Amino acid sequence: MTNKSGLSVVSILLLILIIAIPGLVYYLLEWEKPQVAMDTELTIIGQKKDISITFTDARSGIRDFKVTIVQDQGEFGVASMDFPEKGIFEKTANLRIEPRKLGIKDGQAVLKIEVRDFSPLKNSASLEMPVAIDSVVPRVSLLTSAHNVNPGGTCLAVYSITKKVEKSGVVCGDRFFQGYPVSEGATTVYACYFAVPRDVSRSTPMAVSVEDAAGNRAGTSIPFYVRTAHKFRDDTVRVGPEFVKSKAAQFEQADSSLGGNLPEETFRYLNTTMREENNRKIASICAASEAKQLWEDSFIRMPNTATMALFGDRRTYRYQGMDMGSSVHLGIDLASTRADFVPAANSGIVAYADDLGIYGNTVIIDHGQGIFTLYAHLSSMTVSAGQQVMRGVVIGNTGNTGFAGGDHLHFSVIVGREFVNPIEWWDAHWIRDNVTSKLELIPR
Image (cartoon, rainbow, N blue to C red; front, side, top):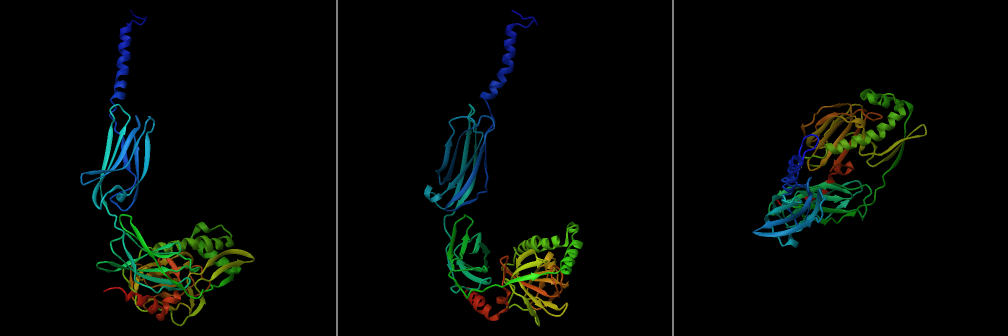
């Protein structure tokens, strides 16, 4: 039998089979394997480890998966899951591995991940990763006992750790401060300088915190005594039209994007947004510090100067009845003769020597182990970044660059990226009682 076009029914059936069979064969004999990927890098597992694994199969979907740890011919099940119905083309499994609960001992092992799809061939894929099991928690011993702190001041903690760690330091308030190794032997001894919050109280968290490469964590609280609470001053700074216009014009000349604003708008921007940006940049500059102590003796206060503003002063700026922003003064202002010589407060390496927004021409010196000094509003700078300087060497001259209202030096001390009260570091008695005496506890 033939149709009008001359094709027989058999020919049509054969044509349909020719078209359909490859698709049917492709379905029945799907060769595309599922995919498995670790979303986090894994080389070592501690007492517990959270991992994330993603399984995908774009054609027939995921049938099942299994995660095990193989060690010394034994296989320990971590997790498994079967999918009774098709339609799951991607699945992310968030798992927690706890070796001790699984009966796995410390040492080398292999993490094995297997997955199959829903094709009739049950295509499978696997991923094997060598891992080290380390469930030994570091032991921390606090070597210092006296931690007498001043609000906004600095404290030093010395402690030892029984094994190598990836992270070591002190948690104070809501900040973490890095510790630096100062002696190695059967145990490693660390020194950690940390900033005390201006609102410190007996309830302020203060503890050593460490973590090894396997994620095992340990710590110990730091007993401390808060000396007589210090009341920081409140001050209203009234600014006049000439100062507002001159500072606005000064910064608009350096940054054309500020042009077109009213002087008051530019002034408020400088005193708020730019101030915050500059302080973040300072924190970034001070994020990397030499691991060894570069300073010695007390820090030099610029000689023959009068104190014009104190650390921690809370300032509110007012202009013709308008609020022009508020800030906390993060250093001490020292006034002397115009363009007076500015000495390096102590030995170290220049981390920064350039313009720094509201701070004007600024030099920042790294004294090691997270301690920095900052010299702002300079009229000139005689050092450059990377230069090593000795205690007392001239690094520049006072000035009124940046947001300064007159010729002076703004001097700051920064510990662990936090501004602290410089007065302590000028005091040889404070350094002897709170630093030197503690460093003497370190085994040599």
